[in-house]
Length: 320
Image 1 (cartoon, rainbow, N blue to C red):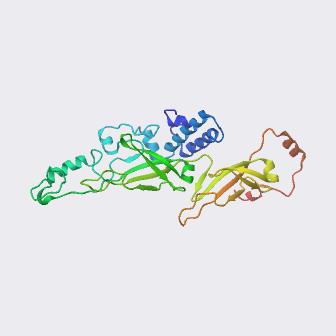
Image 2: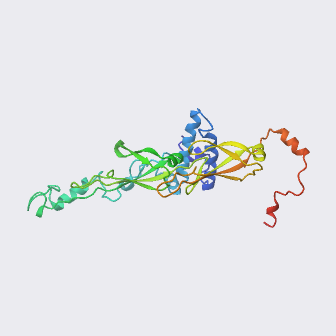
Image 3: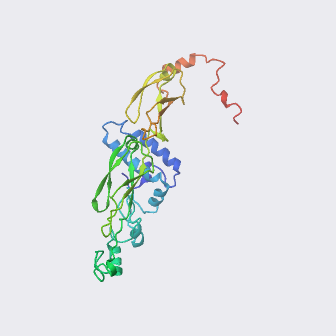
């Protein structure tokens, strides 16, 4: 992947969000693995394009990249002692010390402070004057929660999967992604946060899900949409075509005399249902694509007389 994300997408650093989105869609479609089976170079380009778009499409992350706070992979760059103290950490760890006290990875420094207050014996129980301090005071605290972000590919979010999240000090955690998860949804992993103090329970890990864009599918609530090209013959005469869905391709009947913009509904092919939420549908929008080399069609249309009473632009009357 190029060191510069703007170079990866082929846009200027001053590009608008729409220009970035347009460049991503064009590059993602031409390099998509489904259109380049067995082409490892195209697969790597597709990954790099998706990674670049993931950062540049998010205004906050784009601003951090432009200012040098994160690199092209989204990893934090060293910013000096003040920044690192509060926000330093590996990629994926959104807040290093949320809900806790700065310093160390658990409560070591905090424990030292409390040791000065309650006696250097730590937090052990004891009688009057014992190591626990006057009255045998014992402090028992729940560990702090840790907050992470996890990027999930669009189809994995629809189908469900298990993703591995990198943690500090080279550790990792497997996160089960339920089918149909929503963008921005937070998963709570009990006991996977910071360690407790004085025998207290560990905190939780809070995983914020960020769903990556897909070059073919878009999501609207529980429904999925896709634009599918058809030939002029398929549009005029109708017929069966193969349409991609998250669960695999399905055969769909194109009605005769279909126009660009005709929508077909595939029931239950959208986001899977969960609990009392029904499964969504997939909407297929047809787009007529002409073969520029079809000279026979061009010759036929030159000889054919169009019906005098048909005006495809009649609904535009009075629009100005």
